[in-house]
Image (cartoon, rainbow over all chains, first blue to last red; front, side, top):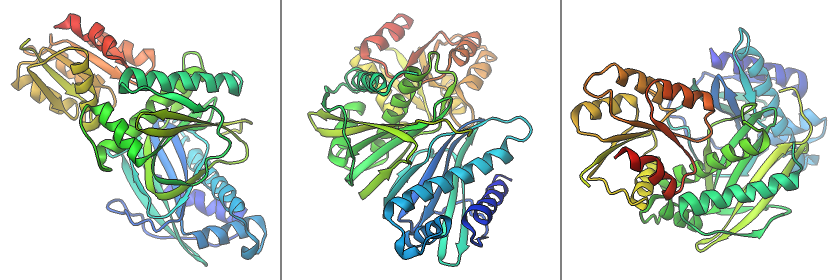
Length: 152
Length: 160
Length: 123
């Protein structure tokens, strides 16, 4: 159910703001640790669920998405454009997720996005939380969206 | 809401309270207005999100060796390698800082909620914030080395 | 002193931190029992002699509030004092805990003196 909200939100964001076709893969509910990401953007969630929504992307994919969103050639995309764009995309995906989630009176509050670049990063925290990963494919490669949450 | 300087002063107070009161480590302010964080190397970052009437992130960035020293003091047992205790300890510090910031920003702290703390660690990484965010970075010194406390607050409210 | 304490928190790191704080407060327990959630805590209380419980609120399987509720229904253990450990939990959750029998709370960060002040009188 929650993954459906995320898939719909991603579809909205990519078709309206990024103008790229995106194909979601099957939701992975356990054991996924190999993110292969160079850049991640995270939004903290609070309210009736607490946790985090994150996008994890290889740098090439991040650049091509940024180029498309900003209407630039990928070669002209600067690092700052990428971090801004990826942060904004996470924000919009989380915003869309929030709209679906809060139908029927539930509460969800979002933090500001945090963007982290680097490879082979280890993450921890929310060890008792539920989580799932949605793999997504676009023309320039693959990326993932991760939701980690505790329902109160 | 208080100005960023007032918030920064209180953030320093909170950090000192956590370290001297609960972790039992003396800390001093090395730089109360770090302009840019740059690349973090062999470090671990603990962070928690703020949401509600104020949106933002509270983070602590700690070089590994310093993290071992902090964890050793916090737990009262020797820690010399990156493990779950270090991750949990750093995440817990971020959580307590978040709790204090929440109180600083809103009297009874009710209109702001925290997300859940998490940590990221690696050989080399960099943390960025968006344009519409004001950032305060404070560097602290301890006997085991220096670390950073990083507060990001949205300067213009959006409707999320 | 010969007293026993039960620490309830889903983070083993946090349990070590609290254990260290108790030692530094000068409170020397004969036994420090640990539990990762409310369910485990109830099992320990039924099996061992425990003089005071320090419990987190947010835990999986059975949280601190549910633990208090269930404990109050069990004759053999209902009178064992429980202190809630909180970070930034609002007054209303602490209020609810007290109405369910918690004798007080310790808000993080806490100093050894504070621990002594709150836990000491219960021993």
